[in-house]
Image (cartoon, rainbow, N blue to C red):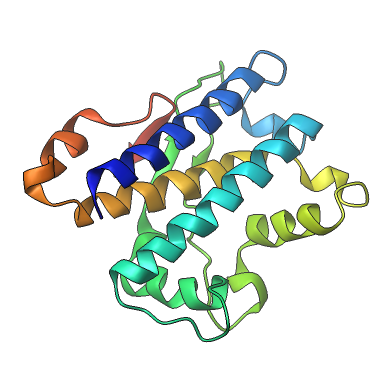
Length: 185
């Protein structure tokens, strides 16, 4: 992956993350508020998952994975995510609330290529919102918004390994990180 392509994806990610961060002014990003839904959360989910789809396609291209159909979809992505242990990548929000630590996420933890929507609830909910936002209004919630942005960050971060060192891979890995996420070790 060339650095300029990564930079374009990174800037878009930062924009979406900023949208998510701003929602904390109205709905505290805490475990108690995971089910709170809003049009803004739905918008974030739609933007983030759409970009995630592009990032996952790029990941497939970088690993020389061919689509099983006429276009890439989660059935193509899931085995790759499992194979490279991206399901073990965990993040926590950096927003702390008294007696309620940040929301801990492993966005691909339950991935299973043999199940519909690869067994990812937030991906299934994204598809529901995309096809009928009004009927599925409650799926535009804080947990799905945070999960989709965490997944987007996870895949974008994994793509840094494909940036040639001569284009500054180590610089990016050292200096590009989110202010919203804390890595889980």
